[in-house]
Image (cartoon, each protein chain N blue to C red):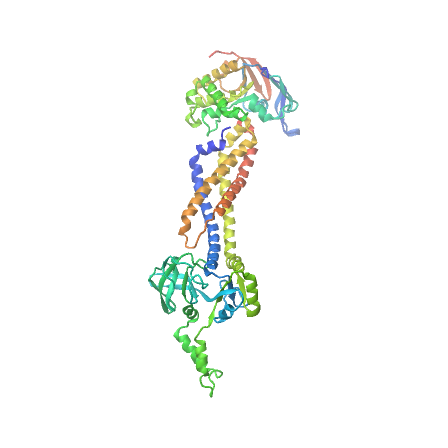
Length: 400
Length: 235
C-alpha cells in the first residue's frame, strides 16, 4: 500500500517545509526555554561543585550564603577545625555587584577566599584556563572568562583596583553571573566599605554619644571607632570532611555544639534549585505550557486547512471504498511529519542559537528526547480535529 | 460472482417524514445487463443523483430490492454488512469531474483501489498500466493529474472505475466537461470496456450529443422512471 501521506507531502513539499520551519522556530524557542532552566540548575550545581565544600556553615536559621544573607564571625572556622571529621574549614564571602574598568563593566559575584591553596582549601577556583592562582594577600583576582577580562587587566571593586592574574571557566553564580575571586580580607572590606563622608559622620555620631565618649574613660571612643571601621564577619564557612565521615553526622555535631546552621551538599542543592530558582522555573514552565499550546494550535490549524483543501478527494476516497482508518492515518502521518520537520528545525536552531544567549543554555539529550515525544503527542492531538472532520465527510458529496 | 448486471425493483427513497416528506424516488425498477451501457436522463431535481447514490450504496433506499449479479444487496434493508467493501470491489464510479487524487500520478490513482483491496503494489500497478494502455493513455502513466488534459484525466478516471473489474459502473455525467470529440471518445471507451469486461454501465447525462448513442435510455422525472429504446447510433 502506498503512503498517501508521504505522497501528499512530496506533492506539496514547499507548504510543508515552510510551515515546518515556522513551527520549528517555535519549537526551537521552547527547547531554548527548557535549556535556560537546565542552565540555571547547572549554574547552581557548578557553584556548589566549584566551592569544593562538603558542608556549608552559616548563620543560625538562615538559608545562606546563596539564598539569604548570612553573617558568621571570621574566627568560627578555627573551632570548626577542632570538630571530629572536619578536614578543612575556610571562610568565604559572596557579594554580587558591578565590577569593571573603563572598557568593561559586568555584574559579577565577588568571592572572598581565605588564604590557602587550591585543592585543599575550600572556596578556591579548582582549575585555571590561563594565568595563575592568587599568591598575594591583596588586590589580585582570578576571574571567570565570561566576565570578559583577560590576564593583566585591571578593574575596580569599590575604591580598590585589582589585577587579573588568572582566568577560570564555568565559575558562575546561580543566576549565571561570572565569579571574581579576590583575597578574603579585600572582600570583607569591600562588603562594608563606606565612603569618607559616611565614616566621618559615623565617627561624629559616636563622639556625640555619651555612652561611648565618657569623661574619665580615655581610649573608649577610639576603641569603639576602631571596632566600627573593621569587619570581622564572613558569609559562611566552607567545610571539607575527612574520609569516612558522614556529612549528616558532622553537620549534626556542628549544629548542636556551635549553634550554627549547617547544610550538606544535597540540602544546599535543594535550596538553590527548590528556592532560589523556584520562581524562575515556574515562570519558564508557564512559558513552556503557552508555547506548547501555541504549537498545538498552529499544527491543528495547518492540518485542518490542508484537510479542508482535500475535502472533495477525501469524499472520493471514501466513496471508492477507502477505510476510515486509512484516511485518519494519512492525516495523522502528515501531522507527525510536520512535527518531525518542526522538531529537526527547532533542534538545529536551538543548538546554534544557545551559545548566543547571555545566560548559560544547557540543551540536554534527555530534554530533546522528551521534547521530541511531546511534539509527536501534540501533533497527534492537533490532528484529531482534522481527522474528525474528515471522517464526517459524506461520500455522497463526491456524487453531484 | 457470475456476471448478471444490476437489477433494481421497486426502489423508493423518501427524505423526511409526515407533511415534509419528499419522495425522491417512487417505485423505480431497472435492469442493466452485463456489457450494456444505458443512459439515465432527466431534468434537474428529477431524482437522478438520488438514484445513483442508492445504486452506489451511498445512501439507503426506503424500500425495494437491489441485486448485483447473483447477490441481493438490498431488500428493504442492506443485506451486505460492509458497504465500503461493496463499493470498492463491485461498483465502479466515474464522476462528472475526474476527481483524481492530486498527489498521486495517473498509475497510482488507478492502482490505489486494488491496493486498498489488498492487491500487492506491483500487481495493482500492472493492472493499472494495462487499463491505461487499453484507454490509450499509457504514455501519461507517470504524469500527475495537473499535467493531464481534461480528456486524459477523464480516461484515467474511467480506468479507476474499471480497475477492480466491478460488475457495474455508475458514471455521473462523465462527458460534461469535455468537447464533442472527447465526449464521443469517452462514450466509445465506455462501450468498449462494457463489452470487453462484461460490465453493466449506467451513464447519467444531460449531454445531447451522447444521448443518441445509447440503445436503452431510462428517463426519470419526479422520481419515476420510464424506459425508452434509444437509437443506439454507432460512433
